[in-house]
Image (tube, rainbow, N blue to C red; front, side):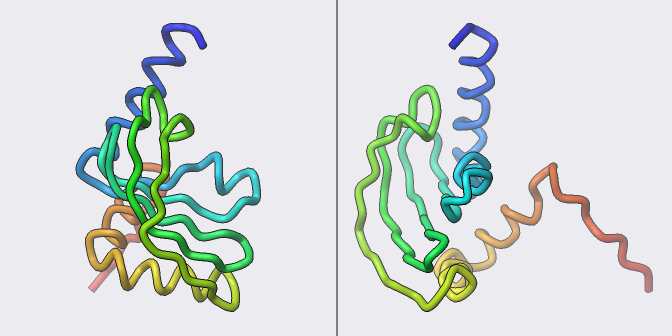
Length: 113
């Protein structure tokens, strides 16, 4: 990893300090979804493609989340990914939903009244 790549990874991990972030690599690899908040240490929710939801904490995400040590606090098997995601949304509440929807990569709809 060169200096530029290192700085980019630090920026991605650092951006989760006060908001939930989705790990794009997990989704693109077809391995479900990983959401985390807290910077180098914090909380996470992981949903597998089969519907397993795991929540817990992580430490040592330096320089990026792939280096973290994940500590599972609770797990539950749902019937599929969608059901697990719905429960994750309930757990995360309004903050989780608003953080994910405020992502710069998502185009916001224009509402006309």
